[in-house]
Amino acid sequence: MTGYSITEIPSLFLGPKESKNVDLILLPAKSPASPATSAQQPQFFDQPQFAVAGVTDTTSLGGHGPDTVVRTREMLAKETVSLSKAPASGQPVTASDKEKSLREGVERDPRSFEANHLLGKVLDENGRARDAIPYLERASNLKPNDYENSYELALANAHAGNYERARDDAQTLLMHSDTAELHHLFGDVQEKLGNSLEAVREYQRAAELDPREPYVFDWGSELLLHHAPEPAVEVFTEGNRLFPHSVRMLIGLGAAWFARGSYDQAVQRICEASDLNPSDPLPYLFMGKMQRAEPRPSEEIVKKLHRFVAQQPQNAEANYYYAVGLWKLRKGSEDAAAQIESLLNQAIRLDPKFAAAYVQRGILYSEQKDYPRAISDYQQAIQVDPQMQMEEAHYRLAQAYRQTGDAAKAGRELKIYDMIAKESAQQAERERHEIRQFVYILRDQPPAQIR
Image (cartoon, rainbow, N blue to C red; front, side):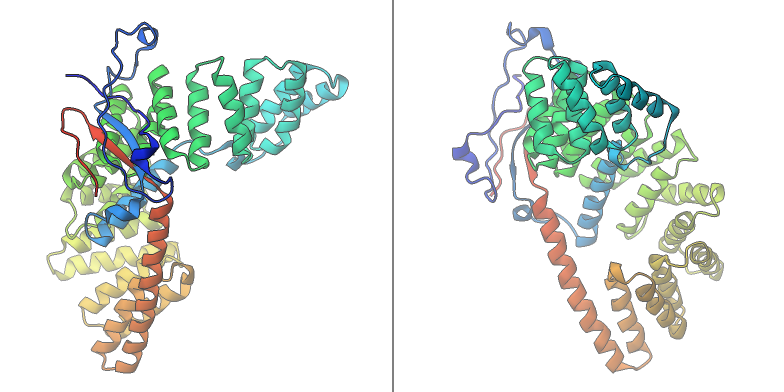
């Protein structure tokens, strides 16, 4: 059967850029035998089984599930993206003998292309992109056609936040050099500029030209970020096949399955990630966040979280997430309650500002009808982290006050809860609106429409 390409939908289908839904349009791919494309066949896999056809306003499509689950999916998608290599500008800066030597070289011969280029590159690699740009620009003036320096200059501008300049430089280079690193850089700056459809195309092209782990991962995470879980599953699955020892590829695959609503598949992949490197905290943290959205977590996840706290007993999050897992699996026994309380006590000792741990301990005390201690913990959660607003803490505090017969305080807390919940919903809606949703077509399925 004929495949499908990632193809721009004409504006008559898309409507105004900022707010319209788009129809799914099925477009046949070019023949693999075409002379214009036969020399550059994808190396990643024969042909993607999907096509990204456009973007639409996320808010128009609804949340597709309970609010807690929807928020967790969005959070996991963002955190998956954050696993990508951080920009150089965020890396710690340390003086080096190499930098000192290169500076001396530039001072001796300010018109040396090599000295300016190398100093600019080292400065950018050390997280000092703005300092690097003048040297790379000077080198560019000395050798305008040098590819490596032109690429480093575009990269430094991207790291410095000069996205328009980086985009223009990368676009100019792409006219002469069809390299994976350029397409990947172009994808990065297009995403920063809000051009997500162009970004995913560039990430795909980079992965096809050179299917190294960072390029494949960024392609998958871009799809996941823009609410395209089926294509993301496909890309991360292939990435896992190519890089079976990549922890973050399995994490991405687990997050994509979770976004699809396949909790069991998500659990399996994240557990596999934790087995690759049992001392790496990342998979466990994803497990912990996933289990919070489920009424009853997988027993396998709770076992893995037990391993996490056994290996890292001084990690506050390890204690907290294992406590939450045990609480959700609890049988009502006093021994289980004592263990959960002990874990939460440890989490709070290790991090006295761990608001979520106070809330969870307050829930435990409320179940035991120890309302004074529950009230104290809910109040403490609100106090230690007021920036989080802690809508759950206010709600549960209202319930605890009601149980003690203090209707006035209960009513006051419910009013605060209602206000925070409304603000939280509005903030979530704004964030969803900022992340445009990909409209995609799955191969071998009839075209559908979004209304």
